[in-house]
Amino acid sequence: MESHEELLSWATSQGVKLTGIAPKRIPGRGIGLLATRAIKSEEILLEVPTACLRSIDTVRKPIIRHLPKSISIHGLLAADLALDGSAKYALWNAVCPTPDDFVTMPLVWPQELRKLLPPAARDLLAKQDSKFASDWAVVLAAFPQQLDEARYKYAWMLVNTRTFYYVNAKLKRRSKDDHMCLQPVADLFNHSDEGCNVAFDHEGFAVKSTFAYAKGEEVKICYGRHSGDFLLVEYGFVMDDNRWDEVLLDDVILRRCSNRQKGKLEEAGFLGKYVLDRETVCYRTQVAVRMLCCGIREWKRFVDGIDDGERSQRAADQLLLDLLQEQSQIAKKAISEAEAVAIGDRQQKEALIKRWRQIQDLVETHIARLKDNDG
Image (cartoon, rainbow, N blue to C red; front, side):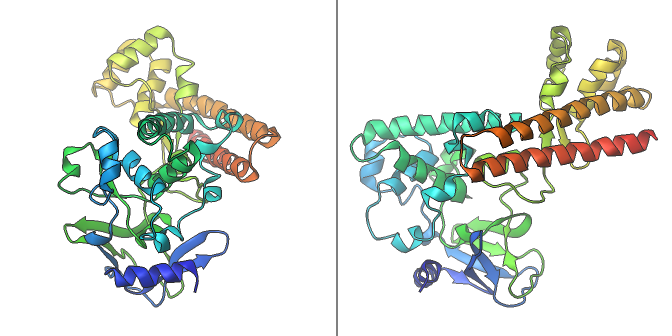
């Protein structure tokens, strides 16, 4: 019997209910949940009772006593996983990713590859580094003999990639970042930009289909409307196609702004976070571009909503075209550098190159759209 089959047997005995789906090993992609029959929209496919969850309520008391109350739930759950030597969750643990499976997580990449990440991914990774360092410092101080950093980091990444949003009486008093739990079987769902609905109440979690599936088709959930940079940093994968993808344009825009112009943008609340998605650039980008191509009075009228920007749109589009062409060249250079670097795992470099190619494709698509509109 394979590990996921043993997990299913154990989970069912704990009250987990699966309807029309079952875990199966997918070549090259680990374990996923596949439809065992035709599934209609609005069917409840999985129910996980609260008693099966690993949450703040299930962390062992000796661990809680040794750690400060200020530790994040992420850090607390990771400590519980890393220090658990019992057989209680052995069948669940057996289907979890191994440390080697996390090789594509930038958190474990060498610095040479980290430096080549897109700016948005680097910013996310810096925050992740800080969170991990904070949790590890607290846990190390409490359990200096029982844990090493590698073991704790592995558990921390398990929590990072496999938790679900969850709130109970204890968690309500904490920040939204602490609203999380682990649940068996449900953590086998892979991600799609559209997927089943996941909801919870005091009785537990329920996963409901939002559209039909054919027998044998993989059933997925949506981890959130996330960009490719977010998915790479937080989960360690790059999707082939992501309807929620976006590119951060801060570098190419802000390097052209004077300090005075940056000051004006900051005063108006429009400094930074300039985004290109699959359809268009955001309003913040339109504001920043007009700072560069319009007079200050015309720009102020646009910001205040007095001017709809139609008169300045052609000039804005011309400048935006120039900016996007610069962004495309940045992506092209990053791909060349990633291909040439000698350090790092092959899968890490492949993920990095794939992400930059996605960025380049998204930018080039919008460049073609601007050129067509101009023609």
